[in-house]
Amino acid sequence: MTTWAQACQGELLLRTVIDESPDVILLKDWDGRFLLGNMALAQLYGTTPEQLVGKDDGVFNPNREQVEFYLENVRSVMRSGETQLVQESSTNSATGETRYFHSIKKPLKGPDGKPRILVIAHDVTDLKRAHQVIEERERSYAYAMAAAGEGIWDWDLRRNTVTHNAKWCELLGFPPDELQHPIEVFGARLHEDDRATVLAQIDAALAGAGEYHHEHRMRRLDGSVIWVHDRGRVVERDEQGQPTRMAGCVTDISARKRDEQALVHMTEALSAMNERLEQMVTERTTELARANEELRLLARRDALTGLPNRRAGNERLLAEFTRMKRVREPYAVLMMDIDHFKRINDTHGHAAGDEVLRHAARVLTGAIRESDFVARFGGEEFLAVLPNTDLAGALTVGEKIRHAIESALTPLVGSLSISLGLGLAQPDDDDLEIAVRTADRCLYEAKRTGRNRLVVASARP
Image (cartoon, rainbow, N blue to C red; front, side, top):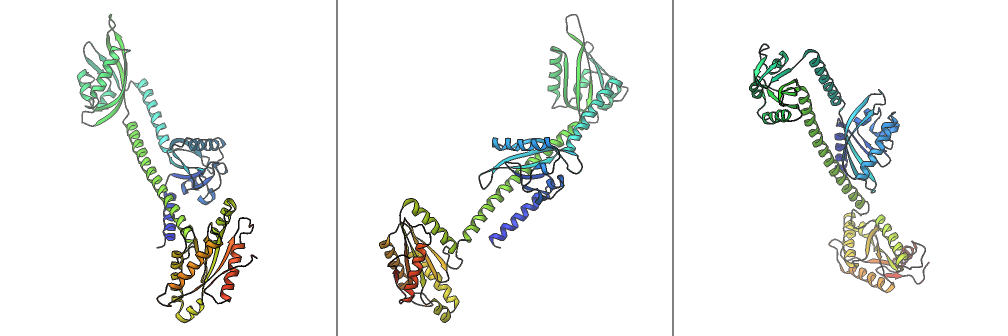
């Protein structure tokens, strides 16, 4: 499989992973325009991932306050340079429903160096509603406790006994008629990992302001564990101000604790998934950059000889012309053509012709200087660019090339020869092509006057 095919396959896989994610995943620029959005975001906004690109939230979200918050927030995160967890909401364009999200926002730099931001938003609407339900349930507990005396306890410190109501007995699994116990029974029902802390909190309340509240675990008579919110207050004191009676109530909060634990696990799972997605995005970005660089090089490389191709040659000519105008140093151009190449193809076949071209490329690469540049310019024609080179230096390099080609025998064809035309670019030239045209004209003259020679123009066109 080619590098290009692998890159395409990898990009398709990443796109599938992003679109299959239930979380909203998007990439924005500084102005809040979407550079990428997955299917979850598109469904929220009643559009498609393709239609998102280039647009901002205001196109899809009727809530202007939310849209302005999004833009200011992403810019704030970009300016900070730090990944942030943001709680935010979004209004569905079709239904008008508001959804709530925990959004991880990671600032990035694009290939152009401009700021971008990756957002992975997890919908926590159901969890938020569950919290609201929990809060409402706790209010109901309070109303019921006030109305019916649920979970009431009354501790007589002088007698060291605690009197309960039926609800307290129900919570801890006691028979409903066992409404009085020594204080040690309460201590024995405290979870072994929480007991010391709870007793210390009660002692502190008795010694201080007289108020106590704590969330902890208790073991029922059957051994099962519940979470409770226990609250108490000193209601009577003796003449010396020492507490003699403390009353309070207890509420079963096991359901809320389970919800909180589920939220913790879900948040941890979300964080782990976000880390994996960030790693995938980073790895994919690196792979794409590598693939783009390979494609850039392939587009400028001749597949047969391995030399730079005509496109790369034209780019080097432009770069050398620009450098010459800046530093005021001449450069030379050699146009070269393998002699009788058509005869080689006709006599020995195209495979032999291809081998001759590869052979010539190897010889040319070895004959030029380290600072020089050589490319296959088309067919059997080659181009050499000789930086910071005057006429004498160019003649020396050209003759070295001609002798090297003539001396290096090929396995299938034997000896070769090459014709060369030389053009010199001067700092006062305003025409990029003048040196190439001169070299091309001289090459034609070398071919016309017998081949296997280097021709220099007596006058520039």
